[in-house]
Length: 128
Length: 355
Image (cartoon, rainbow over all chains, first blue to last red; front, top):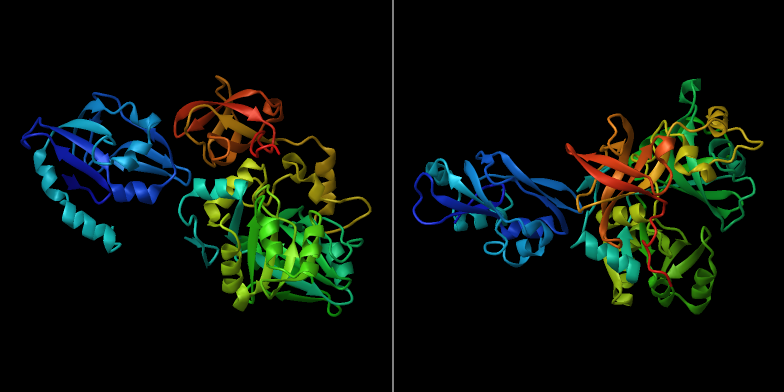
C-alpha cells in the first residue's frame, strides 16, 4: 500500500503491471482530521482519473475537500454504498472503507508515492 | 485557526458532538475574540443614544439591547459597520459587545464621533475574557459556582438582562444572552481569571463540554440567527433579514437613520429565508438559488451547513420575495449540480427538542 501527500492510499491487486487493478481510499489520519463527514461525491465507472487531480469530494460539517487520485487510470468499480455508510471510512479505512478501484495506466507513478512508514512520519511531524 | 487576529479552535473534537452536547447539556464557548468596549461618563447615555440604531435613553441598569452600529457612509447613505449588544451597567456606564472582525473599525468610528468631554470610550477586549455558557444545563452550572445570593440574582435574570456577580470566586459580568438559541449566559471576566473560570465551569458538571467556532456556527444557523459578514453586511437592508427589531427610528436621529427610514417604508428587494436541502450535500455560502427548473438566479446562500439536531443540510439565503413563502420548492446550485430545497421558516422547526 502506498500513500499520497494528499492522504489517499492505493493498493495494487497482484503485480503492478499496466492494466493492473488498484484500490483507492483515504488514510485513517485524514478521516480523523476531517471528522463529522456528511457527504461524498464519487466518479462513475469508466471515468478517467489523473494522478494529482481530483476524482471526487468528501464533505464534513466544516468544509468540502477534494479527493485526489494517487495514480492515473480508469475507474472500474465504485463503492456505491459508501456515501450512505460514511462511518466505514473511520471504522475500516483500509478495508470496507475503500472508495474506488482503477485500472492503472502507468504503474511507475506508484514510485513517487510514500510507503506506510514515510507517510506515518509525514503526518506525525506536521509536514503534510 | 487564525480569526481576526485570534487563535480560535474550530472544534475541540467533533462539531456534531459539541453541537448536540450544547442542545442536550451545556456548551462552553471561549468567545474572547468578541470586542468588549466600555462607554462611561455623564454624557455617555446621550451620546450612545445618538450613535446606535436602538435607543438607550430609557435603558435601565441591568438591561441589554441588540443594536446595529451604522455610519452615514460619508453623508451618502448608511453603512452597517456591525451588530452589537449594548448593556447598561449603571446610569452612566455601558458595555458594548461587538464582533471580533469589526472591532477595529467600530472603535475607530466611535472614537471619531466622541465629544470633547463627558464620554470615555475604552477598549477592554485584551484585559478581559468572555465565556458563553449555553444549553439546558447552563444556568445550573453557573449558579452552582455562585453564593446563594448571587445564584438567586443570576437565576432571576430574564433574557437580555445582566448583573454583576461572583462566579467560582471571580468577579463577572453575567448576561442572559447567547448565540446558540439555548438558554444560558455570557460571562465577562478579567483576563487573568479566564483559565480558572473555564476550568471551574468544566469541572462543575459532566454535562459541560468545550465547544469551538464550528459548533457555534451550526447552532446559530439552526436557530436562524444572522451573522455579520454573511446574512448581514454593510449594505444589507436590516428590515429584509428580520432585524427590524434592531432599528428604532421613531423620533430618533443617528448616523444613517434617514436612509434606514426609507428602507423601512419601501418593499425589500430580497428576503432572508431558511432552506432545507434534499439529500445530504450541504449548500455553502455563495451557492446560487433558483426557482425549480428556473434559469435565472433569484437568490444567494449566505450560510449553509449540515444541521446536527435536524440531521439534514440547511442554509440561510437571501431570495427574491416571490420565493420567500415557506414550503416553496427551490433549487440550489452546489458546485455545478442543482439540489432541490424547500423554504423553511426561521428558526428551523424541530431544531430544539420540545420540552
